[in-house]
Length: 124
Image (cartoon, rainbow, N blue to C red; front, side, top):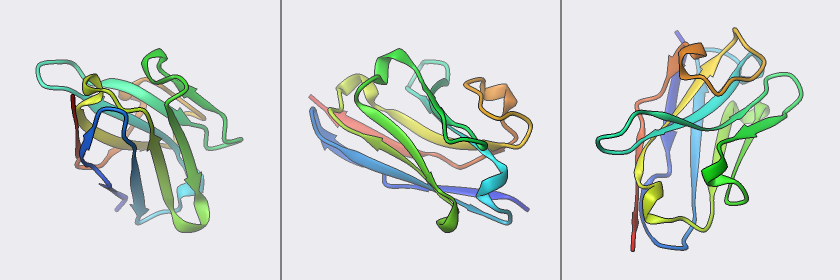
């Protein structure tokens, strides 16, 4: 059974940085496209960044351009979300998700496996 576990969330000041990790167990990360999503209170879940399972290409939402990066270490079965220059509006629960059905996707409905989420809070 495939499981995803996120870690690395926490409380950080405006302008600070965090790195989230997503460890995949029960399978090999190589097979999966990975997406990071977030959901703020009272808002719908949105795609943040995703990374291809084929060539490592990435796609990001405009609000995180130049601040967030996604990466993967297949040898460690771990994907990462590096978040710099954090803003209060980045406050949300962050989820990683995995799919074999697409090379890369920003659409949450394309993802089969999900982690439990990790809270990121950015104070002003």
